[in-house]
Length: 180
Image (tube, rainbow, N blue to C red):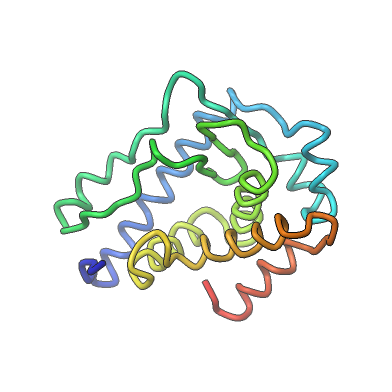
């Protein structure tokens, strides 16, 4: 997929829109979200820091879907045609709040918790900037390094959930290595 080339100032502007959207959605969902269950935290405790597991909140939507961000109209005007449809995603992580369109277990929950760790280490603004840059350089959603990291670690977990590893160290290794 060919994406429009944006000048640096527009990349920063779009990243700001994304960061603002993340912050607003996190705030809206936080009061409705619940902590992870004891079985969820127990099964994932060998992979994630306890503060990640204890601070993450989960909201499973039953009668509604997450709507696409309002800035999508501007992106379409800029020439973007293949933007991810939020209503079709299984789940979306807004900092430490996971909003899901289905019950969260196993691999999908692990994937979203990797994003929580990424947010913890990067902060919302840097996460948003790296997400936008990854989308542009990678040619779309599948090429975003933050997503590739979450999918790789999720596959590693799903292939052998008994072999524990530190998601914190894996994410920090990607940051130090400039992989995002």
